[in-house]
Length: 384
Image (cartoon, rainbow, N blue to C red; front, side, top):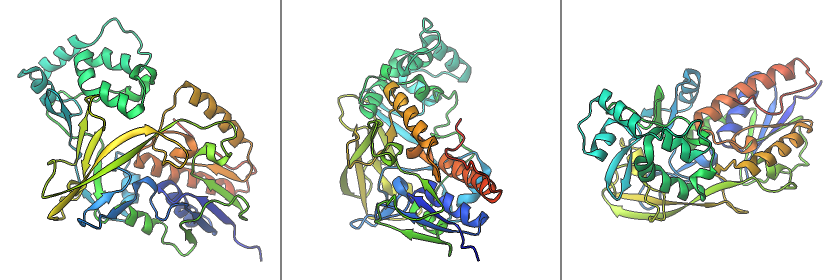
């Protein structure tokens, strides 16, 4: 009797976990997931702070939001998601304001009492009309909100986060400026938003809890491992031993603090002032308002270049990176028995819902091709 196919998935974040579950639900197979870190869920990993008991997002805040019904229904198979609205505030030399820019922000910032129509006309007058098609991040901002709002809310924050002048970044990063002409201060426009009651790691644990899935934590990827097919969700350049060079990423570091009661009164405060060295402060007890904690823990977040050994967060995607990416994708396309999936393997910034949706679609496409005996199995996911 022919043995079952054995698939190897590298990485136990949402991409690898969802793909593994999809494979075992569609194909009579065995899947092994190897993860070099000692925990599941990748950068979405959550754990209890031992000093305060607060559930912390170890690699920075993650708020699940989606307008894809099938993705929302999928994650709710594996955990209870409590409704939670992200209301970000920006601390500036001129005061504390709501983000994204909304009617309250506009009226407070300019000392006005505009109604929506008046605010829309006023904002239109602020934009730089000399800019045609914006060529970069800065021009995109100046064209739509003008210099004063740009410099207060975006310039310093962006320079700190990305480590370069905003004019060096693509306009696509800010392609759709979040400006609202009502008092809605919800950071997202998504239909469904929430945070899992027991944390993201508990959700991923349930996704991989299947008799046909074997999980190996603290286990580096061994290319010599026998398998029918490999699914790689780690950094694309790392798979090839950085032979062509390293793709550019920004990473973040955290400075932890602890206090009695409530430290800042909100989950996330952004600091746009370039003279303030950190980008934001997140206080994690506010992500779980259904819990009570006498003490609180908070984290100042700093951005820096990613070096060897650092956790990769944000792909920079500057022009040299895009050239290098094309070369690595060409190498990837020549591989046989290997597929590349997820934000690191495709070198894109992706929210959780995009990662999950893409993993579900890729798993379905792969299963269909594999069971049909196709010679050319999917290598990279279809990208927008």
